[in-house]
Amino acid sequence: MDLRQLGNSDLRLTPIGVGAWAIGGGGWAFGWGPQDDEASISAIHAALDHGINWIDTAAVYGLGHSEEIVGRAIAGRANKPYVFTKCERIWNDEGVIGKSLKRESIRREVDASLRRLQVDVIDLYQIHWPEPDEDIEEGWRAMEELRKEGKVRSIGVSNFSASQLRRVHAIAPVTSLQPPYSMLSREVEQEILPAAMQAGIGVLAYSPMQNGLLSGRMTRERVAAFPEDDFRRRKPHFQEPSLSRNLAVAERLKEIGARHGRLAGEVAIAWTLRHPAVTAAIVGMRSAAQVEGVIGALTFRLSDAETVEIEDFLEKGKA
Image 1 (cartoon, rainbow, N blue to C red):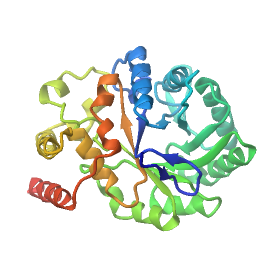
Image 2 (image 1 turned 180 degrees about the vertical axis):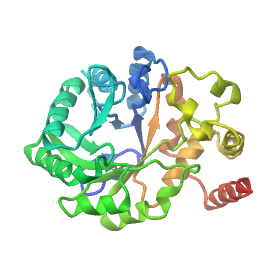
Image 3 (image 1 turned 180 degrees about the horizontal axis):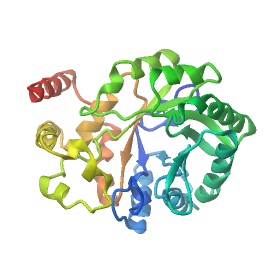
């Protein structure tokens, strides 16, 4: 198995990891609709059985529920994976989500995450969003304190700009950056990925299949039937005229994948992994069946000719 070192850490990761956003379930601001907890646990077990060695979650996913499910799934496992989670998004008793990078808030959050995950140490602890911007230095100093105390092994950030990355890296080394990155969302290629490469910061790309759009299993009918609490109903990528173009991209990925016995989603993930700045990709998995549809991305890689073919198709789609 190809293992990749994450930034300045001793973490050696499989090229894809389990993304636990959707397994937080519905009923909160950025949920994916209802989710069966037993299906989530089965998905995690299937991924680990296939050799995937890390899981990425966040405290806010399902307002703590995703972390609880991850904790249940890995309890008692002989092949325990690395567990990554995030702080900064907080919520009150009514489920209203807020933002805090204050030192004491982060210290409360890490203890709550450790308890929900049922672990003694978090392998990678990340600031979820750089908000409020004026507090990112205070928040990063708190993260470094936690690392020195041994509550977390490594520290990273998510959704930071290149300038924000430089600000915190000057205080204490950043192990990793987690940006959104897919062939439909390429903004990070201009400044953010080069900045991470230059600083030796590992990159964990999230949403490589653009929230399922490039899985090859998305249809207009499925989009129209999304539950009311599925945040994707409100995303431009899932609305016309973008939806038709994006589904056409997925069809082309199906064609490329068929040449190798691979699925469209595995091609989309391989496209993300082709970038030299990207260490690994976070892949959402909500059931054991979904794991079977993406697990080939552990080893499948695009040829240079196929990368060019995809680029040409994307360019034509802009016209």
